[in-house]
Length: 105
Image (tube, rainbow, N blue to C red):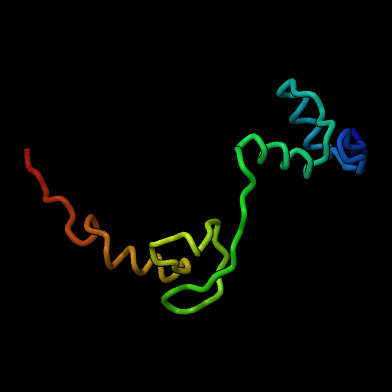
């Protein structure tokens, strides 16, 4: 079975359907895709609802530049990078600090 070159029905770019993908689709009884992966991804994202925006901002603890999926001007909570968020969570999570007592039955 050789790789198949398809033309996207939406944007007319060419894309490959590799042997492994062909085999899997045949096993599952799924037809070969008619759209390229970019157009399929765009379709999936539109089914989720509104388009997502990404924003550049700085971590409020270490000032490192980060990208977030919410508008920093509308957020009241601290905006932290992953490292500082993980540290904050470890220091402030009541379950980690005060785990439930052992219960003997």
